[in-house]
Length: 504
Image (cartoon, rainbow, N blue to C red):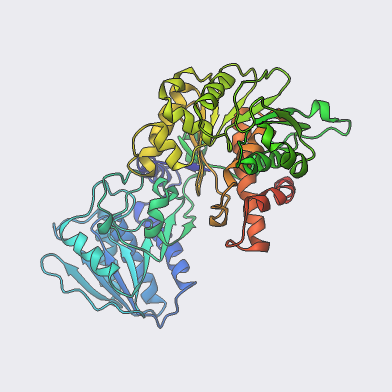
């Protein structure tokens, strides 16, 4: 599913108006009906409704919704903010329709504003500003947002909470953003909805289909997309009835140090569950017994050192390699790590301590071969670029730049993990949950991706399927186990069900 920029959203509206054809005010009416239905699904007609409408088309939506709710018996008070004495054409049209209806208490604010009382029983409909906002709120509008935020009223925002911009909020003023309980966004989620720091403003998000032109979606390229199960289902490789372990791929995992054998165990078990024929785990000698017991299906290759990875190994026997989980950051390990990556003759996943080593030796990033897969969490990525990123949008933009420059695949891990591709595009993963915020979850993802690479998937498809299956396994586990008790091992145990669900 494509995620359009603010400019593309505007063009989508315009294209629909011209090619359906439909007038802009009738398209606004269609959106208002969808919003009205969503509100009526959750609040009865005896709920007092206070509507705050801005001077643009977001305000026009709010005025139309007010009229429709009043027609259905809701008691509605409307405040239209027209401080510059200029409304958009459709906002002005809906103001007139509202005045002609005469069923709402209507106040047009041009100078002074006496705010209404907002209590716990009140429903506030926020139609001040939508996703097209391009600068932080200030002055009276900022004060209005703060007044709503400090109240006990429930808040529904139309399209976007007022003050939150649709894309880049790096330099926004956070205290001047409305905190919605429910955001009814039109046609698609906006880019900023995929960033963790913005969730506190969105509340629950519902996407309302207002039947914008599907033809525009088909023919318009988008840098940002959300992965869909139907898209990934088509990418699953069949398994021949005559398959044997020798032609199902052989993965090498360079993982673990003394005291961190668990990372190697989790990555190895996840790799095996991803369908690979064989897994070889290269790990320090001290890990021998525990690895042999915990993952009997894996072949063990012991490092010459007792407690740490110290020498690179030949990669020609392997179909894919992953390096980093629990590796440690000793200097001899760091030197062995970069030598191991440089000499790799197969696709490589770089994770965890391998990323931290690169952050400590930033010149080595230039030595990475093309096609590398890196899977940092936000703090690891910030260390990798040597500066603290100013929020998720800034971090994503930097990851896109590095992916293009190095022709790499970078997965920024988190809720809505983002895969940055070498062509500059970004694909968000919709699966996963907060129960997966647990030690070892990233090691599991690394193992899954390495297993898929060894099976013969391309780097892009291994990342896509790896993210999706990892999150889906977590979602299936949570249904049985709940979020509080989920462990990384549970994600591995539910991978078979995730594969079956995707294959259905």
